[in-house]
Structures are given as structure tokens and as C-alpha cells.
Length: 116
Image (cartoon, rainbow, N blue to C red; front, side):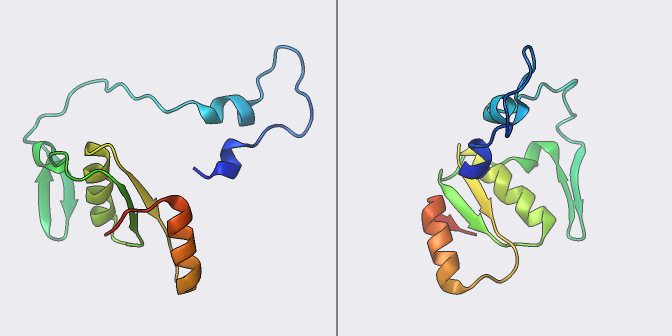
């Protein structure tokens, strides 16, 4: 999420008892509680290269950091974000072909420490 998105709010005062979603809810992290656990041997990811079981999908925590990728490969992106999150890291995803100098500035401003 960009800093601009975190700084947003309703353009005018909200009525008494109402919540300014733009200001209040955007600052709360998502929480997820699984309804049930998956069978560790069940297929979690199916690609042209084969299958990956739930037990093998999330790697052991590797190197933490802020990763950059511009991949269009959904399976590769999934593996990257799971590896980053397992190490308490994060991912910056870019798309298209930005000017190389602009990309360098953007990655620096995002605090990117590694590229995949």
C-alpha cells in the first residue's frame, strides 16, 4: 500500500456515528483465521511444471528483506511472496517497462533490498 493510500480520508466531515472508512479501516491490518487446516499432502498449487503439496508450498524462512519482482508468472510470484512472508519480508511488484532511471528511484524509495 502506498503512503498516499494510508493518508487518505473523506473529503468532508462524516456524520455523527459514521466511520470514515478511508481513514480508519485502511490503517488496520488484515486478519485471517482458517476455517479448517488443509491436508499437508493435498495439492496446493498446480502449474504446467507439476504440483506442489501444501506441506511444500511455504519454504523455511529464508533471508528477510524487501524484494522486487516484475514477473508475470503467477506461480513464481506466489512462491516469492510466500518465501518473503515466511522470512517476515515483503514484496514490491512492478509491471510494464518503466524508464530504468525511474525504476531505480522507485525501488530506492520503496526500500527494496533484493530482486527476484
